[in-house]
Amino acid sequence: MSFETDFWDAVTGDATLAALIGDRLYRDKIEEDPTPPYVVVFQVHGRPEQAFPGNVVIDVPVLQFRIMSTDEDESVAVRQALRGALIASGYPVFFEDDQSGTDMLSSLYRRDMTVRVSHG
Image (cartoon, rainbow, N blue to C red; front, side, top):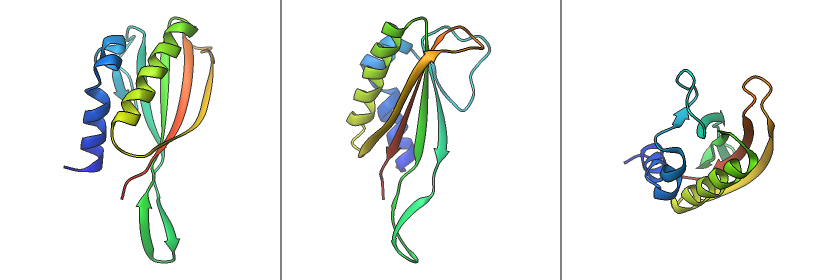
């Protein structure tokens, strides 16, 4: 199996996260008018890190998880479940940023969580 397959199977197979968002975990784009809460995942960056010129040591993609929910409490619950699923994936995950507020376009509560996932 590949990193991508293993990683996404772990995240989408998490029972706690699935209880909150069902199958509403989207990659790069969403279906029209999804029911909140839902999560959209974007790969922001994906270059390999190098320790020495010419030697790729580790691949560290940067992912942004956008949680869209009806209110802050719901977004916190989804964030906690998502963090648990990411940690349980077995890959080293580094949580870098977490920003939240009301989305101006949809009026939903929006939380953006940026993470790095290390794999070799």
